[in-house]
Image 1 (cartoon, rainbow, N blue to C red):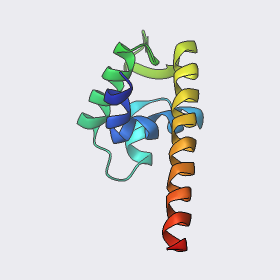
Image 2 (cartoon, rainbow, N blue to C red):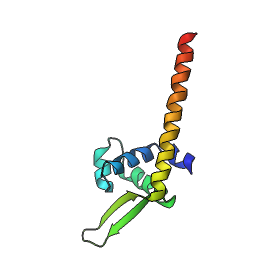
Image 3 (tube, helix red, strand yellow):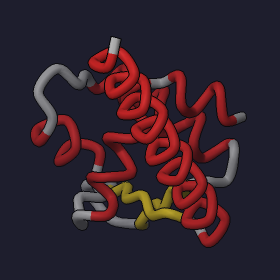
Image 4 (cartoon, helix red, strand yellow):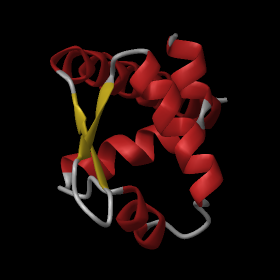
Length: 101
């Protein structure tokens, strides 16, 4: 699961958008250069299947769909943040070691 989500370069971007209150797919595509509707939909679907985000469909015309991070997703994103911090520490230590030689 972590590999699948972390392997999709857009997942982290989607989490950031949701954290910033951008929760509609059209808004997401407009806010991120290079992100296509097709790729976004695939990313959202994977994240929803894993229970990280929830798809909310409103019974309106025209149809409105929004996404939000689930309680599980909040915990999962915290773990990803910690992994990213750990990677930064590893990279910094490697750079320091390289500079000493």
